[in-house]
Length: 242
Image (cartoon, rainbow, N blue to C red; front, side):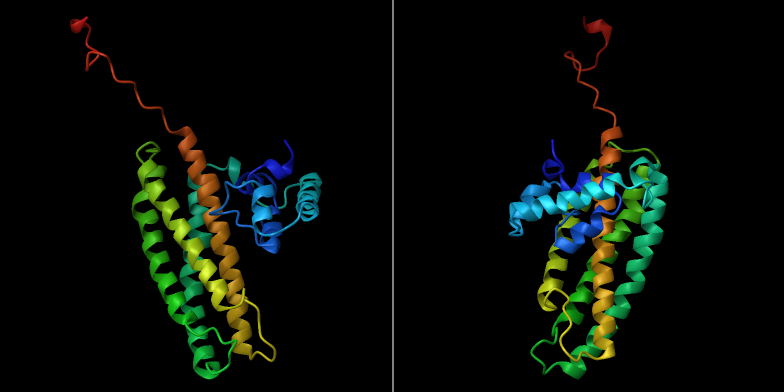
């Protein structure tokens, strides 16, 4: 099997630095992580030569000496959860209020310009509300279950979290639509520049956040969940019924 036939999620997990290449080509490795590289690239309108070039870049990363980033695939769930809380949950709570403030300022000052992202501040406010609700569910329900080793019982909350991750992916698509894929117009002011720089960081952080949960934490804990005990034919397994 070639790299082109591996899923984006697998490649993101196994090759340090792959997520940056996926970012550069607009390939969704978090919510769309189950797609193969070939299928995802073709859906983006990339031709076979471009797909092969991406695979070659990944091969180059794969052959580099030494890990470029922390390998979370081998980390204990507790360590990964702590990383998610400190690196992403806390960070999103810092990022979004400031981005909302900047977006409101840009809309107030430049709202008459056709390239102004009117509606962005309200969209970011909605994203903050949805993310806060999502993160609290993880912090108060799902993560404590995983830390206690209740992996089988966590399957339903994980399903809910995956669905909400898909919603976050849709929100990122809407963000891209409002900002022409976060492309600065000519003669943009410093506030506008700071806003779009922050939006790019938010998008990368949120995609990495979702990837680590969908493709690493959830996959690992699901794989280690004990299989359900088969029901006995007599209903209770007692030898007295034999």
